[in-house]
Length: 184
Image 1 (cartoon, rainbow, N blue to C red):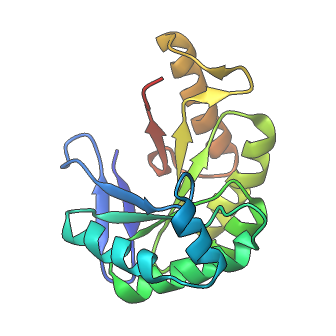
Image 2 (tube, rainbow, N blue to C red):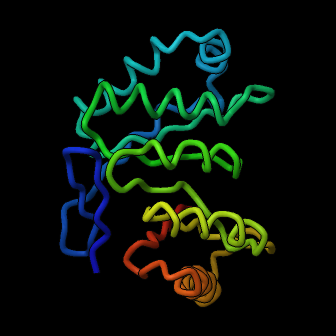
């Protein structure tokens, strides 16, 4: 099963027999105080530089996050997605824990975006999966739920199956659920 993601002009395919897909994650103010301050001031120069340099370095997609505490994340995320789409043809991974920010940014994504991310927490699934379905997006599944992360392979598989099953309840095809097996 392949996951197909798109911008207005570029297609990226994630699959077991496909080349590894690099998703650039530098457009994220988490842990980057200077970038957070720039974004709050309306200065997107670092975002422009990061978007272009990541694509030049081989990123097939770009993750866009506007999580600046106290800022209007929905408005900022929309602005960042628009900017990145103007600068590159890379498909977008919309990265937010805020439902309103996702609701604002997903409709302006060209092509088929990726939502980063959803975990197995029931409340989060109920809020995010309808947006993923309505937009025709794909979603990244993080390896934890209400109990937190686990290294138990059977528990991880159970959690992965849960998100695929919940996605199916929303008519999201299994190929549109990408599992991030992150190290714990």
